[in-house]
Image (cartoon, rainbow over all chains, first blue to last red; front, side, top):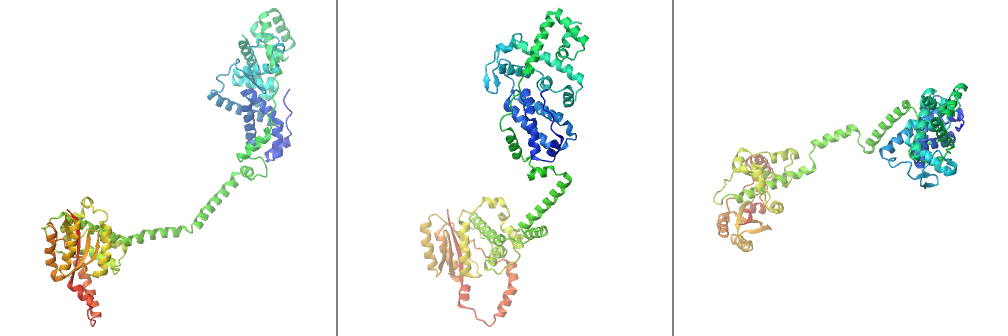
Length: 196
Length: 357
């Protein structure tokens, strides 16, 4: 499990009362998770940073309405995914992802680099650098449907439990499992297609 | 177990969620089916790659930038920040405060403008009823316009046609005279109305053109005539007192030639030039030599319109003014008429307008 342990209830309560330190603590505790979900959902670091900040602004604005502090994690993740969906639609309308294919140069934290063709049957470690593979997977994720991407990110990248995912998305465990399996198989197909 | 069912269990097999018997069945199928075996290997690799995805580091300055962004939008999380505090107050508190603030602003504005609502309306009413200062000048302006219209009309009429010296015709000018002398001071508004109101029937018949705005507009006076008229009016007032001038319009072809002749003629009949402005002259003559002077003028111009004599004294006004004059006369019964008054009685004032043919 990669998820960070939940923040203390009293910190959430302090944050509800407008305590700046508590809010900063909340941001510090969850910023990596929010930022990474946003980054994997959008595939762009700048967009992810901006979106993560918007998420925390929304959190600050609406935390007073949060009734159960214990569900803060799921609540925060739901806000993050909502922001991601809206931003995705916004960017798609502006054809932000139109030229996006698995053959495009990949964006890494160190800059962009040309993409090589991946054959999943080969040993990845011997053929590609780790970062390139990560970008290859990232582009593969972007080819999937939004809800499939959400499930893969929450479960396989962020390590959420089925229960946590269920709380966040409001779906029963069985549905999550079947959808998640379909998403994994689709990602495999996408990566195979791009390799051949 | 067929291939489809085995492939549906890849996720469960990967996450080790299958029962021992299920896992055994799936693995047996995979060992016997190369296609499914290959699919599962690819699935495993995809999952390994997903699992190997590293988390990106949060950009530096994320939190300060976030706080700055919030402050810019007035949503600073600081408890000390008043904007944030106000944002969190319940509506039940905020609404009354806002209502009181609005009322306070209204009264402040009224106070600053030094205008309480009642006073405002009162002053508004006063402004509507009281004559503005500009109205004081209006009758004079209207009269000037009427006079100019008259002059224009005179120009249009034939020289042979003599207009009867109807005292009614002088009604409006008398008002002007009184206004100029400052003795007539009815409410400015009613005075203005009187000035612009349609004239009596007699005047209407004599000046049908005056009632038509269109004709008046078509006979608009030349620019500058109004100014000349005003200047002369002031001089007339100072020289003639209540006596009104006779008006003569001369159609001339050569102005430079006619003016010396005119001056000569005035001198010849014992008169004097009082004022001259542009093409308008004000002269005084002995009353006895006026008819001779008129004949002499016709020599200057073939189309002399000597019939444009206007006696600026309406009958109504003269009648109205008569008792008061009598009273004045009674008050000053013992006082002998001055030399100036005697002179004025014996002299006729003429206003001559030169019009190029």
